[in-house]
Length: 118
Image (cartoon, rainbow, N blue to C red):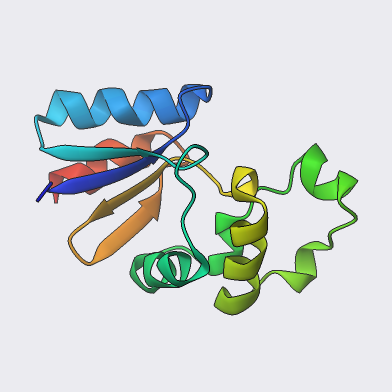
């Protein structure tokens, strides 16, 4: 089993930076391209149990979010976030790094190296 799981989008420079940090740290990592292999609502809830960041931070509030007519305040609790990301995986913030029983959103970029050190 890998030491670290990286939920990765190769089209994102911040996500590519996180992958570089994981490789530089020399840790055994499972890289999951979550757009190709989306997480189920149950898996998303498990992920949020580990997340040190608020569940609402897991949702990208980008142009696609707004184009869907979504409202930020509707996605603050884990269940609502899981249901949204189950329906729209592309709205998951990236990168997400999971190590043991903790996970972080790799933004800003400098959080990744620090998280991998612990």
